[in-house]
Image (cartoon, rainbow, N blue to C red):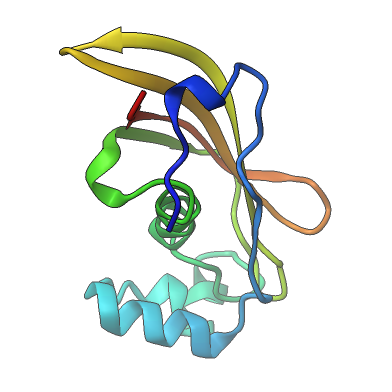
Length: 140
């Protein structure tokens, strides 16, 4: 991976987007197994319906993991200095997640050149499901 350089990026630059396949039951089962999060609201349709949901839906942390993939597809994991997210919507079965990021600030901290990136995960209808920000250290 060719990591971006601080001197080559500017405020307003967008990260290469990450488009993912539609969420299905297999995705949820695999994520539950990998994460250890077996909350039945995500895998048991009867439980979901008893909770007044029409069906199971994706783990919020699955979308957070997708944002992590967006960032580490752009810069090495070792360059990530922080990531904070806020859950803003439910990702239902059939939703196609898409992750994006935009550089909103360039600064120096801790002797490093860093960028602040606004990130979000939306569905195919443009509805935000997760929003947040990351701080990434870049070489000059």
